[in-house]
Image (cartoon, rainbow, N blue to C red; front, side):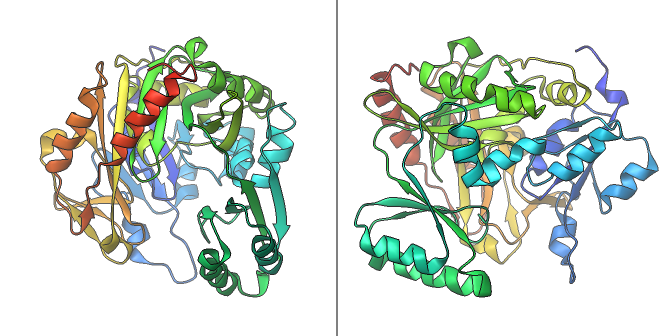
Amino acid sequence: MKKDLSKLNCLVYDYGLHTEIAVRLARDFGSVKYYCHWEEAFAKSRLRRIGEGLEGVERVQDFWMELRKGGIDFVYFPDSLCAGMLEYLKSIGVPVAGPGYSEKFEQDRVFGRFDVQKDAGLPVQKTIVIKGVTATREFLQTNKSEFFVKLNTSRGDRESFKHVDYLQTEPILDKLAFDLGPWKEEEEFIIEEVLPGIEPGFDGIVYKGEYLSPTMYGYEVKGGGFIGRVCKYEDTPKPLKVVCDKLSPYFKENDTRSFFSSEIKLDKNKVPYLIDPTVRHPGPVGFSIQTELIENFSHVVYGMAIGEKVNPVMRFKYAGGVSYNSEEARDNWMRIKFPPEIRRWVKLRMAARINGNYYAAPGFDNIVTVIALSNFIGDIPRMIEERTDAIQAQSIDKDMSGLNHITEQIEEGRKFGIDF
């Protein structure tokens, strides 16, 4: 695509986690307006401020009014739970890109496991669906195996957790019963077997059922970081590519134009079990990397919106990042200080810039991700560490130990035919 994006105007609809997407698009587009959903009966100022003051970004307060004003050339939805809006805008001729109807694959775990994964002919791990907290308690008390426990659709009520024994799990269920209130017996729980093996992942872009090339695969440690390798799509390691290829018809049927990631568990027989799909920008490390690894990022996104296939340009072989938390950020505005020369490699979440100072809005403990790109894998940890040392924030936990575990996974993965 050779179109001059500097003459076009973009509107981003977000829930606050992808402010850096807007900053990246602002490098290329004539204007980028950023909307973060903030409306509720008693609105809070913190949500209205997310995105303010960031480089090249105009924070707007009324999404629909901006569209009504005219002059918006396309709308981008980097996150999910926006399918209705995206598909409506598409139906009236507004260029849009984002997960759309395919988001259900991720957001409804029962649907994803049995109506997508199983129907696609992929191997399916033992999965039990239980309705209600009481029945879930009874199952976990009487079955002594280890399981992963997930809520079907309400991830915000509780992230997935590993059940080892009932005495450890009981307080979690007690808290869930209290939080869910009168609906505690209506909530669906997903009980999954704990699978042995390694856990590689795929990070790419799906365009109408086709995966754009080049793409990336790698290993992630939850809360500890990610290291990925760039390759042509056809060279994606077979266990990961099989999963993608089997899902292609689903994405084609839904006219999906979105970033897509998968996590698989690969057992000793090299059977790839899909654990979790991500039909959106993967976060926090994945999308942080994508904004810099993909040199023509804005052209790729705009191409998806107008129905034009634009393959990404990636000139580095390896990419990595580590995401950092601060408990203080749950309740307080967090100032994040770093030298301006590393701004490109420091990616913020729920961010704003006030009087030249960067802040993360309260309500989310994950505040910053540090990334690195190189043609030599050994450079990645060193570059991340150097940049991390330059960052200052109250009570920030600068734990990089997860990168060592990733290195171990990379070596183990070679035995399964996943080269790095």
